[in-house]
Image (cartoon, rainbow, N blue to C red):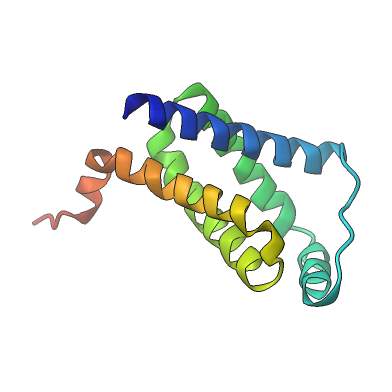
Amino acid sequence: MKIAIIIVRSLLGLLFLYTSISFFLHLSPEAETTGNFKAFNVGLMASTYLMPLAKSLEFLCGVSFITGRYVTLANLIILPVTLNILLINFFLTPENLPIALFVFFGNIFLIFSHWDNYKGLFVAKG
């Protein structure tokens, strides 16, 4: 089980690092978008803050996953991002769904593998 955790954590970390660094340094050309996804993407870019925020979170969580430090916190921070990646790909670009499924379920797998660290969040105090 430990090996699976390290493999999933490393793959997610590398993926998040690649996509965030690629976004900020413009390493790969923009993919051609069409239809509803193009309209959605234009809206994201028009907000001017949302994509840099998401990519910054991806970068920080990618570093956390690669180094193995603060993984419990990184799992919670990246969960809304991975959920949005899954839903965007499910509804707008189903051809990318396999990667989105890996990202989302990899995040869920890491959360459940560190479940003891989260138990305190669900215990009533007082």
